[in-house]
Length: 165
Image (tube, rainbow, N blue to C red; front, side, top):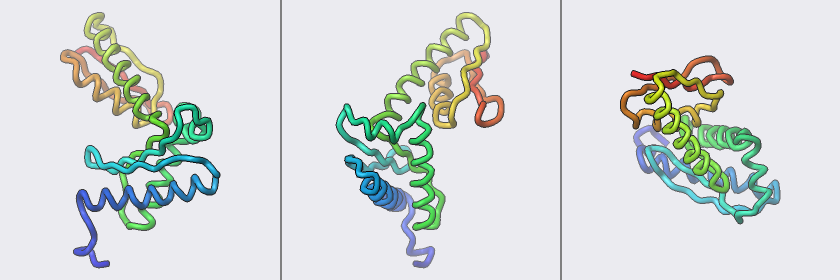
């Protein structure tokens, strides 16, 4: 396929989701896990979700402690996309709604911390977080006037620090 024939924009994101979905479907088959693959495009990235029953212990294993297995699976899916399509992917993987629930928790943490810093004037340093977690917190803090956030430290101990402006 010549470069001019390669899909771009929305078409590329759909193709990324398809490739990642096929990869994850094969993985579920190998593991003999039940799960439905849902594909979407949102915010300029492919979103791939593995959904199952609410009490599905198998899928919880795919999330792991604090999302560690989920992060690894996401990276493997991105590598599968890169190998097949030849382009780096920013696709987001969610399993059993874990990432959405985590986003909601982190948004609340970011808002509460921002309000606390605004009221007290004292900076607050949060526990180390993954890049996904830090971005959610930064986005939440950005919605509160009078405070700013920044990331400090080196991976895997990188932390969000919230300061009064």
